[in-house]
Length: 594
Ligand code: ARG
Image 1 (cartoon, rainbow, N blue to C red):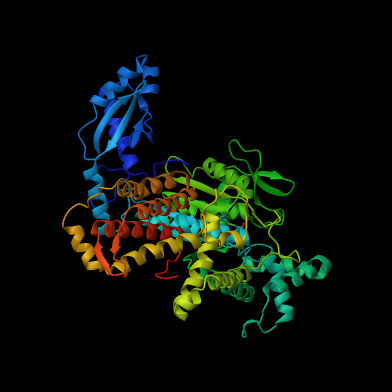
Image 2 (cartoon, rainbow, N blue to C red):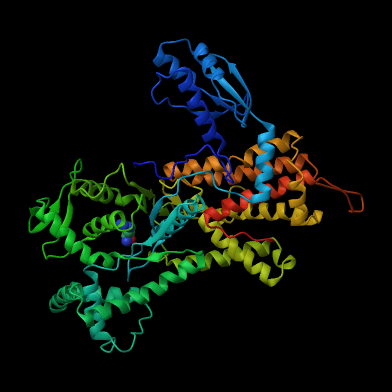
């Protein structure tokens, strides 16, 4: 990954929420440079601290490289910190740590702004991003690996959109390639009228298996299948029509999953690049970059010993060829500053190879374009083996989602929610919990690891699950509702001036929720989403601590409200907004009641 795409860049917040840690880093970098102009690009790291709000440890490494006493360096840096609204106090401690105490006024104002303007992104320079995710293969089953790619990719896209980037969400469908030869040949035999009457194929999987069987067993059929590929790639109308029909059936199936999970994505499969592949292959060939290998044409990139197969011995193109042409298109024509690919970790070599070849071919420069290959581990069943149905087949995603709905319904009924909620409210809660849990269970784990898919675990109402967190949010909302405070009143109260944060737990909650911008900036660096889930969970825990210690609404013995603490209601509102934003970035629908 190169370039500085997505980095936060400005000192002027305007209507932006402040990424406090990031801004402290800037303040201290400036302080170091003004104290020691000779220090070249100093590495400043700000950490959370037990003794203060944050701590800066720059003096240690700096003293080493400057051959000075660390305490003295710490003192100098401290003296050079320019006046700023964030910090109320600095103190040198131990061998040269600088303890940072945040300004209470600043925090009060930030929380108040949050209530008045909603959760706004930390400052960032907008760039053009392509997120390539989901990307199942036509006529084959969309499996749990694609589900992971869909969930992770969608969340990354949502985050980048929130930060103000221009995001192109692309579905790099596997819709081109030799499998279409046999599919079309089989189509011609089974539904000869396919050109005029859309073929009633109910089960494309079965259709795929049938044609594969014929392909493997019948030489004459195999020959026809090969001819069909050649004709398709030459855009012969009838073959193209057959291909379109098959793609259409697949796409309808995929759409069902996307609609359920509320995924926005634009289809742009491998076929889109056919003419560009022809052109690119010619260019690579003319530049002398292709080598003959047993009838194939291959290309080696710098530093990889696994070559790309650019042209197969039958003259056809491959997954490698399409990714080369696709990358070139995204850089040259889509003008992407940043490209994010989300696939299973098993494809790492493919990505290394084609990126190295693209560099060698001269159309990709990692300083100008940032490319991230976001990988993830495999989905395992509760038996820790590859996720399969009892009979050993791949699990159909739509069946999985249906099971989620059913389990969610059972769970909510167990908790008697059907007696409290209206039928519509119940249905909304059921859907939100089912799909929310499936997404959250995936996103809350370190994505690079394998993960165990367990409905029991993800639907647990205790612990770090969407079920628990969605419920926690409805409880906060109900505090405000019970208090009978209307949105206008909250706004009016916030406009009176910065919120008071007197109780220690109020202060703690305020500082916790204001960490969101730093969490988001961190994610733009490594594209690991689980810290956002950890943050969301932390917010709900710290909120509980606050709520257990601070009355928001005081009632008398007969349950009548005697006093409403408006500041605390405001803090409830701010917390709810922060949680809503996290859910929205995670692609999880929230509900008012559950
Ligand atoms: N269709 C591929 C698969 O199912 C994923 C494509 C990912 N995107 C890409 N540009 N290679 O594994």
